[in-house]
Length: 356
Image (cartoon, rainbow, N blue to C red; front, top):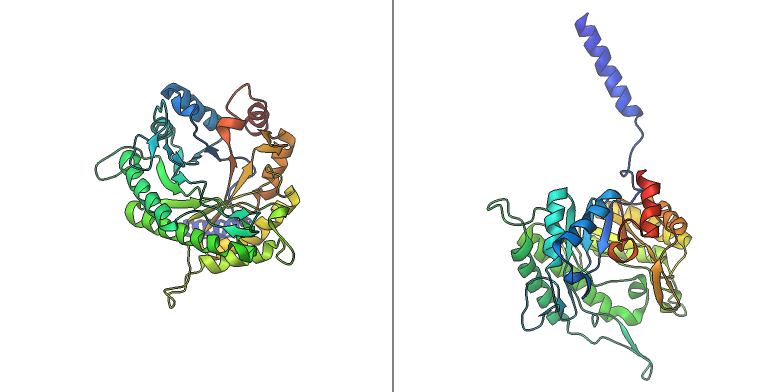
């Protein structure tokens, strides 16, 4: 009798599992991650101010923080300086405070390296030529050295119990876009960006064992020209090639990245919500096939006549919903400017939506 009952229970269990719909991703219609951008002003804040910022993020369901960069050009916000980086004025080690509170709250943190504004495509109107005003070897070497220093300052080691367990990965803040793929004149930067991402990710994996993340964006219409037009499918196909390692070809360009938190670029006005969704639809199968997590980085701002303001909640909610079913995780840019905490309209509206 008991044997019969056990068999019945086993059959019911198997049937129940088979009837459960396949869940490709967790519930991503709510935010679970957010960027923090450091600057000369907030870097001066005391520990309690940062603790409150992290608490405010936790209160809207944030379990992952991405610190966009630890250095901006020559200015660094970590307690470190060298012949290139100069410590931010009145710096109060905001990275330490964020990580300390994240440790206490069980929040994951991805720490950005240095953002150098010169590392991009420039266009000379006089010569009508694309220009590349940087030295890629210097940029990569500085980034590797900075990663080593940041890991020594803030990294966690299970062997000696050192420092911050919340630090789970690195964010590479140099931004890449689809025009860099489509436009033939961008090839120099495209190749250098691939090398930057590839070498840094390999270095981070080997030296720290932590995950790596990038956040490309969608270019505006004026970044394309003539027969080199916007093409989301071609852009996704390029990622398919660059994420697929060919072991038989040591010279094959390859990026071994863990997470692509792609910007929707709606806040910047580059594309509509519908257009952004089209990009994510093409990217989803490509990244899944290459075992790379696709996250959405939804922009919580609007750029109007050169001024950045917080997005209206109704539009921001549409952005989140538009991409949520296509991604592993939904994060946004950026908390400390556009949400902040109670009393901020976008924060209060989102809190009522997600958590009340």
